[in-house]
Length: 443
Image 1 (cartoon, one colour):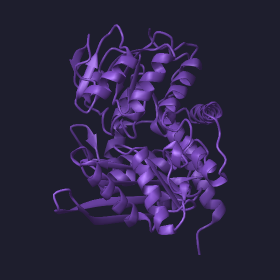
Image 2: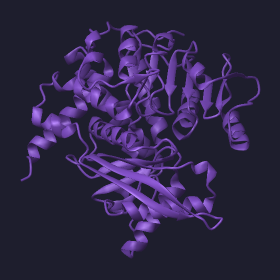
Image 3: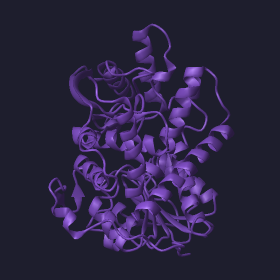
């Protein structure tokens, strides 16, 4: 079933000379430095909204950055030094909020970019947080449970000089989970001498977590896709979907899209992907992945690579893995008419231009995957109040937030005749800039 846009595409805000502008990211095989990508995306709206040059300069740079090198005693008695980061991009609208990822490729530029994207994301959905991100360069799959706990607790201690419920509230991200958040909360609480549940979100329910948090990012992806399709006069029923990445975001997105009537035909994880044009049994696939540790080998499917999955003939593509997945190299071959960014930064600026010129709609990360931080905000509020809500109430509140944010982005899109990413940046940047102007420049 083809996805009809339902209305005339606005004129493109992209020009061929953009790549030659000062500060344009260097591209190798289509990949872009994440921080340079984030700055370029921001710079696209500076002139569009006539942003004050001083405020623009403030927002091009993180407010603070912490790099820590810390020892962890391994199971064999040896000591290994790990490097970790915590970056605050802006706290103009409230405490710093952003996840922690444990991955070998984590570096300072990736964390800077993710922190900047978090600033805009929180502003787009209008929650009172600023943007932060953090991570440790490590391979968590090579660590024992004890090593992972010791690494987590030592890293939490190192970055605790920034953390508090009213200053910096971490959350899960790539390769981190509720158990890791519980260890961080406990470590911080041991130093404080009392339980401080509001210092992290994404925790287990038994220690102050929220109903609906585990599915929140994937549910936000569903709500955004449904809203985009509804506004174009179409139905999700029977539409084919490919999901790159089968972690928390990808697996939940696939499950919820399947339950909503879409036909999920392809998924992938770090070991590769599977494809069946007739559709996948997502419940059985989740069970298979839990037993085998991968989606590969699921019955009745053919093997595809992560790269091949992106180019399959589907209606909807959900990149839910890492940044730099849709680039200038493969954007001309994308067949989906709707790209819903479950991951942060999966589409490079040059790929954005190509997709837009081809009439492909991109639901940008700072809107599409904002469900996670929205329900993290709900969790934080519940922790501070020590009063908790039922899941149905949380999901209803989340949908209202996502639809309201979609409204604001669509209005900006029409006002500026821009693509959806540019429109989302207009909304987010204007809200952060307004906060800075209202507060003033100290001293």
